[in-house]
Amino acid sequence: MGSIMPWALVALCFALGVASRSISDTFVVFVPALQQAFDAHRGSVTLIYSFALLVGGIAAPIAGWIVDRFGLRTLTIVGVTAATLATASASQATELWHLYLGLGVVMGFAGASLSGVLSSSLLGRWFPARRLGVALGVAWSASGVGAMGMFPLAQHLITTEGWRHAYIVFAVMSALFIPLLVFLPWARIERGAPGLAPQRAAADRGPTVGEAVRAWPFWALTSSFALTSVGIFSLVPQTMVYLLERGIDGPYAARALAVAGLLTPLGMVGFSWLADRGGRRLAALLAYACSIAGVGALALVDGPQDDPWLWLYVLLFGGSMGSRGPMISTLATLRYRGAHFGRIYGLIGIGMGLGGFLGAWIGGVLHDLTGGYTAVMVLSVAALALAAASLGSEAGARERLGR
Image (cartoon, rainbow, N blue to C red; front, top):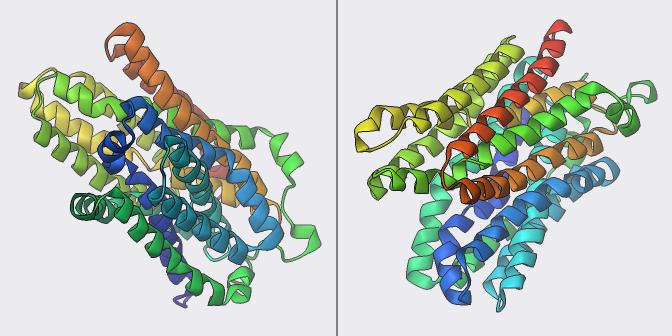
């Protein structure tokens, strides 16, 4: 473990995350231009991103099958090729359904291939339990850190050259990874660090998919992903409008939410570090407690005079928002590391995509039905509390095993 190889692979996972998830997340910057270009309703355009989240979850088992059957090289090349095709096709779209196909289906598959399945399958071969959480936290932080650079770039390109040119630039950026991925020493990477390789012997091939799905830990991790996504995405898409309706100045609210985005990758690494230091259950419960308290702080924002509550929300909710992904991935890797890990993790990952899609949709429906945000916040808190119970149970079981 003294070589630079493990952390070089973390950097690779991070970069591939930027080439897929960060580029996909810039969609929110494209919404006004796409709405104008296709003369479409806002909901019809924003649903493309929700669709990408859903496909990203559903496609995770396919990505897991690819890595188990064909290896890491094939998964990465297929994923980057999909990201390239998605943005390239978007630049040529003439109908809205072209974007659903490119930025929804194809980019959703790229995200599934180059995010959790890849980082867990790859880094699980190189990091022991006491370091795996931080490594995965850094890899997962690509979505937040990458967005800091990609969002301004997207806005600049759209303003100066138009949205089609912006997607061409993103396609080229993704395509540049393909030659690198072809020539990386994958045989060495696949072998992993001594004592951690997932396919050392027939007697140590790990649980099968059937064995995994018949036991509670699988469902604890899957439900944690799903419920956490419901809790987060039922609220986050409506936060900006909520603040504006309470008289918060638009640019000021945007800056506050930008700070929340800045804190997200820090929380990913920080909570993962705490978990690796022997406090997996404590880290999980603390992260959920921060998110729930953050929702409470947001509920207390009733006007510009409630600035302290707004910033408490930014600190607590923003700092914990992305922290559960690396935790769930770490626990899944430690429990299922073996020849069937990709498929098992892919099935667990369905929860994240499905929860994100349902959370955003149900949150919007609840607001429309009630005319307010109380029901949305109650849903968010309830989902996060249930997720805390699920993840806390598996984290406690892992601690009792001393890992």
